[in-house]
Length: 338
Image (cartoon, rainbow, N blue to C red; front, side, top):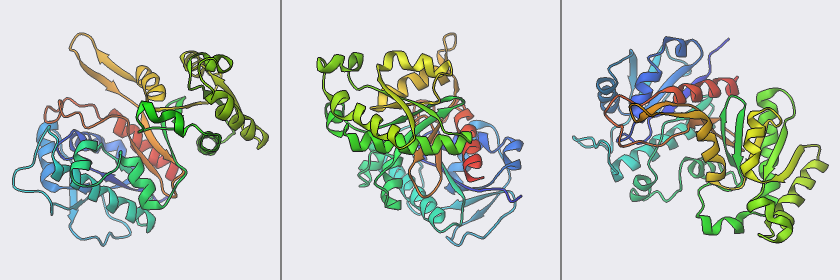
């Protein structure tokens, strides 16, 4: 069988993205399952090899004519925006611009069917916006470049899967985005994604927005006016979805196997329990031990997976960052592409 062609974007060159790529692609078993092309900078990658104390052989292209196949690991080298001194561990507009341009290159290759999936290393939102690209993050750029309006962010690690009705939205504005149409849309996207991953229709739990699921309107009407009608609408379409449930009690039931996935109403309602379950912090060394999990964008006409962590400027250049999440993202992209 032909191995899936993956475009791996370097993300912000001042962050840990280059180092996790250096580490992840040093695993020989990775190459058994995919044909990767890194989109970024040769100088940044070589610097990452020094930080991570590892390396791998690769060939370099500097034009956009990606061949149909290539042996081993390839690097599309685009250093047009980088100066002689490459920033490290800091917010920098040039780095934000690089991350944006490298991502757009990957999206366009995916739309042209030159690659089978995109795997993204982290970008920095402030650097991105300083560069004049006014997006909240990867997800919004992907949606804009592919012309998609209905999309959602899913986090997955093993049987822990959670998606979000809203994501990069200020807390004070969340309620205005909780509509019956939007909640139903996300439930449908989640049902389709989990059906594809598991090979069977899932059982989905839907969170409430308010404490105690609103207590019959005592703490808010979003459950009455939007969430409950959306669940009923999806159930009438043949989707197995239940709720709304108070989020403080639903995640132990997900971990225990009662549900196949949870629909969260906002960013931290999904991200905090996911990271509590899948990130490990070493109390002895006071450093991150393992960081597992994958970010998958639902609703796109192309496949995109990502690490579930940020640029970690405090770890950039130390060689201490874990590549586990990137390996998981590569594995998820291979499965989805297959």
